[in-house]
Length: 136
Image (cartoon, one colour):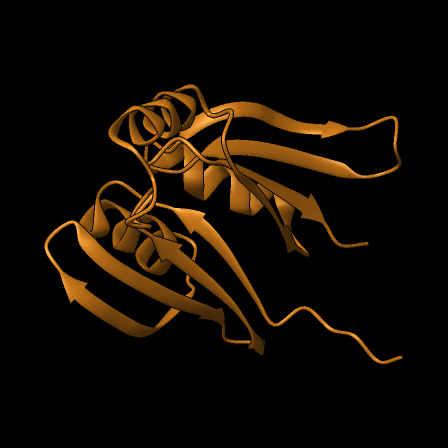
């Protein structure tokens, strides 16, 4: 069997803030911007990994989701407890410094983790946890 990761999804609450974070700050390339207002789906790729997509979606946009469920999702997002993604970089210290200088919300500074990686963590504008591993 030959399985690869093709697309992953994260919710967003502010398309413009998400563009500033993922495109302008992290350097991902925006390949699609579909919809309007808050109901926009933003698709990004890393320039060095064009076959893997990150799609930011409006939270609980499915018409089958109730208002109460939508509120619960938004509350979990605000706490940073709903979704997460792990990215990777060769220069963790430089990446951390750039994100911190841009006032991204720091969750943890670069740290050697007991599971064998050195990483740091931020929250994106919607509250999603963004961990960044150092590639060694």
